[in-house]
Amino acid sequence: MKKTYNFYLVQPPEGAIFQAKVNDTVITAYKSGKVLFQGKSSQLEANKWLNESSVYQQLNKDVPYISDETVAIVKTSHIGSDESGTGDYFGPITVAAVYVKEEHLSDLVQIGIQDSKKIADPIVKKLAKEIITRAIPYALLTLENKKYNYLQRSGWSQGKMKAMLHHHAIRLLLDKISNQYFKGIVIDQFCTPNVYKQYLRSENEKPIENTYFETKAETVSVAVAAASILARARFLKELDRLSEKTGYPILKGASHEVDKLAAKIIHNKGEAMLNHCAKIHFANTKKAKYLVNKDLL
Ligand code: MG
Picture: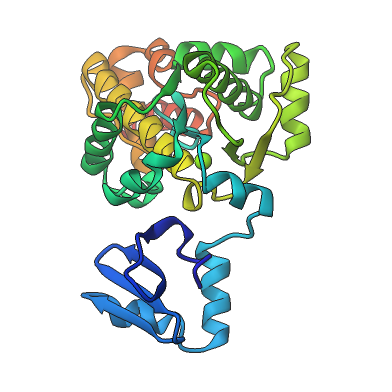
């Protein structure tokens, strides 16, 4: 049970094995075997533990299998990296790497650092500011659309772009923190470790030692969660910039609404504008052109 709440643990009161704060619920497990759920959504949280099968479902849904090495790493000073914008037609890819010292872990959890996908945009922006004001060391890279499209045309897969961005962000961060201790590096897994290494080698880069890949790493590593927030905040900022540049409020995602917006941009600003604000190889481009050609704007 403690493992499930790994990421939400707070200082336990006397006689307790652990205490966790999940949103507005406080879970306290006592040495006696009693577990107390308190707060607004306490019943909901407690229900997850009512029978073993639901516990199993819960574990599979929210808490992925994490290797023992990673569990040991995320409990102490470590580095985490994550990216944003990869599934969005408009806007760049951003990647952040963050170094969190052991003494900052609980503070970051307390202020609400968690997977940016679970947080509304305005809060993501606010939390990014909080991370930065705390002087948490980080490196943040943006792959702008023009460069993205160029690399894509030269044969780079999006996976390779991500791999190189993660690698460079981590290297930049390592330079920044020079010789400060960290137990390991956790990357939110987007390809197998072997493929990652192949991408690096194809650009004559050496994989960095002590790097671990975990799916849903942002649920167990505060550093990955913080990285997800910094990357997302930068991505959102870039969308604001592109809204100004194009004169249209730029949308996230890759929906039909996005097709229609791209069609408007092609119609009013010319197709070349997409090179500066969109990932052109996405199917949205074709769909947008169809809308323009058929006069379906
Ligand atoms: Mg990720």
